[in-house]
Image (cartoon, rainbow, N blue to C red):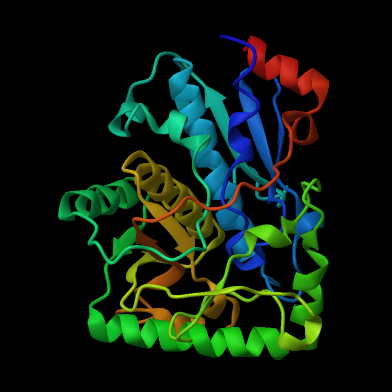
Length: 327
């Protein structure tokens, strides 16, 4: 195996959905041929993500990247979720087995999308996403144990209304606002989100893009005309347990990488998922059979702003780094 790529690939998952300014929710150690993936609980947002659901989703996304990197390097990633209940912060193990077999059910070129994928909080074109791409995304989500649905017009209106309500609450809740503001950091700081990457607000006020702060906080925001009828996808799981949150993260990143390969952009409208009374109302079927995990906005448009990420040494110790490479 070549040296540079194995440890660095997992470092570009989407930032934790309900903790968007956070630097990510995973840390790695690599004894022999098995990589242990731990929750980086020190980065959890206690007010916004008290049950750590979003942190689990972020770790699931890192697992998807890790699996894609393993396949790229000619290894079969054997993933176990929550392998040791007595160690709650150990969220997964990934054993690097022989040549890829089952992993080839996924596209082998996912790896190259890791380096190009980033959220775009900018306006998209109204050009529709091709049906073939939507079908591919749906099939990919099912591989990871999740469902990806395209809401109809009525459902889109309802989902955006819930998102707008959550946005209003979040920008006026003192504890959540302070937590979010603390995560807007210097552009060179890998632990947060730089202000330049936040993106504009919708001039018409119809698309509730995340503001990250209230008007009283002095954060200057630009305005732009967004698409009037955004193309949305709702990611759900059949249950709502810790393993389901991890599967949702794997499915989310899988979809984001596929979108990147097709030249499409995405941003996450996750505000309503952060409120316990609003999240069940995001379900498009009965809430007891459909656990909403993420609302995606997709389309053609400009790439998002690049943001700093952790270097491999921040995720692996040097010894573990060498062990992962040599395995």
